[in-house]
Length: 334
Image (cartoon, rainbow, N blue to C red):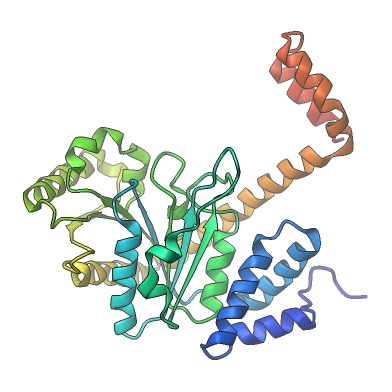
């Protein structure tokens, strides 16, 4: 008897695995796109295949620099990532970008325009850009972003950049899956400090004032104001969080930015904090998936599904307290 917990990859999965860990080229890129599509599928058989393939790829993961990028709308995240990506390609790196686009709450659709906005980077075979819809998932990322990141690592991309849909109290999950969380701000950030959620500022490992060429004086003031704001956060913020200013359009400040990133990551490796950070992230992700799975099983439980309309109506009509209703629904799963 075969242990059901042992990873057994079928022929199709073995072919995908071989192409993924093989040499860079069109075959690898096709395999990478197919694998991420398989991960994102809602079909039970696709999920089972994806789980087996992911386990088989696990020994080939973990060797990349994982960078999270977030920022307010209009801050120039795509322009910044493309400029940075092109610089990294010149330096011999292979760059994967997982770009998350917001999904419409009305139609459920998503524009997925990041690949168009990063046209030069997406046309280079040394780079891989995958736009995915958020599909209602909170945290500024998708449900499968972590798994997609691992697949990119298995394919040999040594820099994986995750671009979130925006910034706010819920758009912070990217910090829980990357080695470094970078927050982009505009030169007039000083006027918008009240709109910056404290939680995001506390999570930032590096703050970057983009579009500094538009108003250098304003960018300098914003840098000083944000540096002061970080000090006010005190022990809650990362010790020594730096604030840089640059212009992605003109390419100024990018070299300094990457030097700061590599120095930060080198320190994390030397101290062993990167390995601990990743282990902590893996544990947190396991429990998130457990909670998500329980929620899905609850909604699909036959007894719950049958009773839900009646109990919901009783709550709406004020005949049943919400807490009592919740306990009754949970008791149906026993």
